Image (cartoon, rainbow, N blue to C red):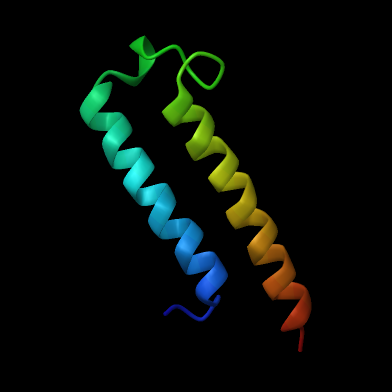
Length: 64
């Protein structure tokens, strides 16, 4: 587990899996259709946003 906790680690792992699957399906990212046309890109984008939110919460809880 990272210093950021299980919630962040779970999202990061899921993001890694989605990104890897996406790159196998669409090796040329410019041809996949982007977030609006590719469900894997959309899912990765949502996960990225959730990871940022989790980091913000972590930072607020761990202020010195």
